Image (cartoon, rainbow, N blue to C red; front, side, top):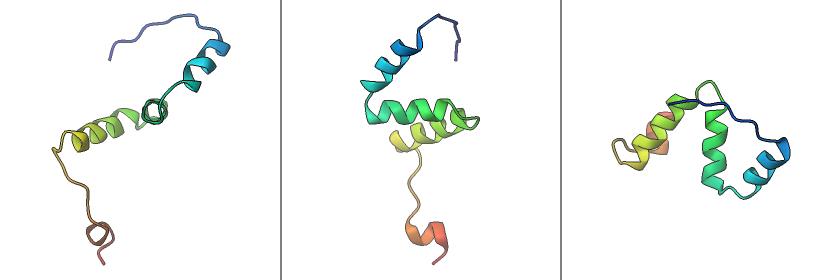
Length: 62
């Protein structure tokens, strides 16, 4: 993903975050973690139905 540096005041960043949707905030939180890229890829796989969610029984070997 390309990166660029821009100078935006913190108050402007706060305004932008306030109007973000829940999904956009979730994505932002993922991007701010070390595992963000991997988690975003997994989320994309789920959204595109490339993989399916595990059932509760599958996840916990019940």
